Image (cartoon, rainbow, N blue to C red):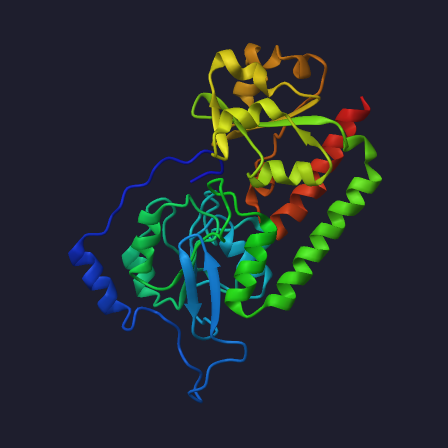
Length: 332
């Protein structure tokens, strides 16, 4: 599954399969005690989620990372998941190149929109991370048959809208790495602050972020990690696009509405294909920002994936590549 708009997933568990999974997981993966029979310091911990409180009895040993960028977040905190969801279609080890070297061995790929419950159960997870998800109770109930599931934190209204700060701190709490999580957040927030100070021209500049997927354009809105990266750099997001989203992270745009991507600065990228359709599209090339050379097309797939990653590791990589493009475009 590439970054960008997602479609509804189908439930794959039947009652018989659920019974099989529970048997495979023994006690349901509620956490394992240390060899001495005592829990690790700081445990048990209780986390608040959209689906209610979740208790993690002991420091997890086997972690399955199901949510968007949960695997990269765990790796940044020094924990290697045994199972991961490859949302952006990287292939082994199923995370971006900025995080891949942190894996010591290849994890098991366990599905994205349609979780492979048998593969997940075989890993005997102590916890399943699904902190950036579609907010579906069906998905939560499905995964909960295997192990405790840590879903998005309370108050997240936009699907896949868990901020990188919330995700980092929530996963850190699960893994017993709260101090390191706070460090990661402070480091990246500090970098954003420095970039805002160094680029005062970003402030009061409106921006729009779009994608081209399966022959159609769409726009991301605040609550999506791509937009949040740019607003944290100081940009103002085009308000008309927000009104169209109606609580989603992405809104489809018909050919008649592609001009809605016009702003002081427009950023677009293709999903699953080259930039040729964008370079040759007279509709896109006719919007005012394109005609005034204020359109940025992310040509490098790695840059687009980093921009879409939503993890601290990926965002740092994205800033390395995207900030110079923003600076250059505004200077012309």
